[in-house]
Length: 149
Picture 1 (cartoon, rainbow, N blue to C red):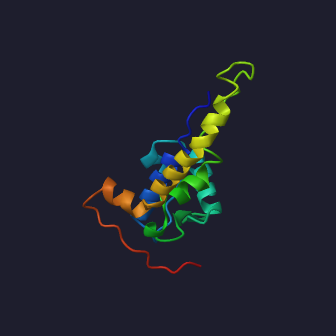
Picture 2: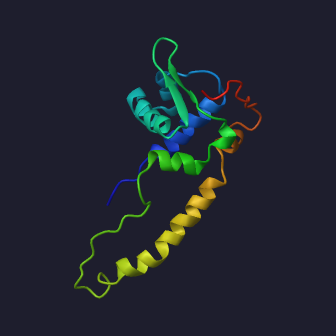
């Protein structure tokens, strides 16, 4: 059985942290402190988020990551697609000679896509801004001042 990935919750955590200072580059070391994980792991997740256009990175002394667009315009579905590959369900290899094993892939295959579609719909309706407001309800989340490059 495959182990569940923590990339998605970590990516959401990092984006929420960045949303509180949207015009500031925050180092992977600082982000690793809030996420309580290694800075290398943070950089790997940030690299995926950058490839997806959700963050921008800058190297050097004043380097780090910042949001590439407003937190209101980043959905959890955007984040999920950036850091997790493929389907959320992975079929095992059942015994094709077994009456259950020979049919279970077909049966599951008939409704699991609908389950995934429902999950994606739910993720699409929630923004990083909404998560940030729920995490620290009274904390103001400033709007981005800089235009996208």
